[in-house]
Each structure stands twice: as structure tokens, then as C-alpha cells.
Length: 131
Image (cartoon, rainbow, N blue to C red; front, side):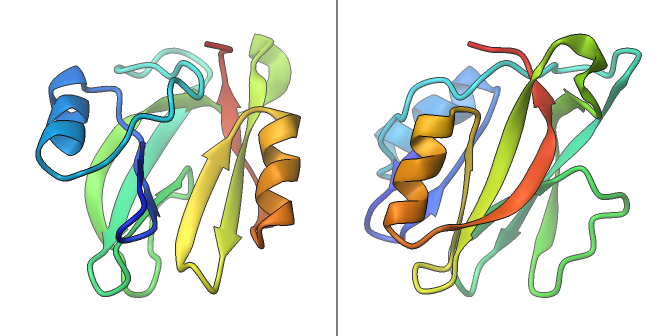
């Protein structure tokens, strides 16, 4: 999901949370980026969700413990694979300093499009199943 007013991308597996973000908070749906697991399975690692209130930015990471200056841990968004052994696809993390926004994608086309508007690749933050 994306909120143009605060330039924030937001991801969730919770349908009620997604509905609230769209219907109450003003986010618009970007569709499904890919599939992650709601519970931990063999070969998966936590995908932590953090939030920075000062810059209105959601940040997701598999780093444990997630310790990012200015961000508060919101819990585990779900579980992703830590490598390609599962047949998953890379979940790319990107950052735009001017927009103070993290963006995640699993498609090379979206990766290229984001780079053209000023996002830089931070790396792969886990592997997910295609939507």
C-alpha cells in the first residue's frame, strides 16, 4: 500500500489492517507484492516491521535484533525465506532519502522504475513466494 500524502509504503498480511489503512488512514492498494508466511516454518526467518513517526516511514528487515536508529519495532510482519533454496524470489529493499521512504518489490520492472524516480537498492531482504 502507498500513502502519497506522507510518502510511505506499508505492507501487511492482515486483511483487517489493510482495510483500515485504506479506508481510514488514506493508503491506496498497490496489490500483492508476494506471499510470506503468518507463522514460522522451517527455513524461514522473522520479517520485522518498524516505524519512524518523525518521517512517517515503515521499515522491514530480517536483521535480528532489529535496531535501526529512530525506528520503533512494531512486531513481526510475517516470515520469509532466508535463501533461494525454497524456490522463492528476491524481495528487494529500496530507499529514497529525499522521500524518506523505504520501498519493497519482488519484480525487476518495479525495481527499475523505482530507481528512475530516485530510489536506491539497499539489497535483498529475504525471499518470498510469487503472488
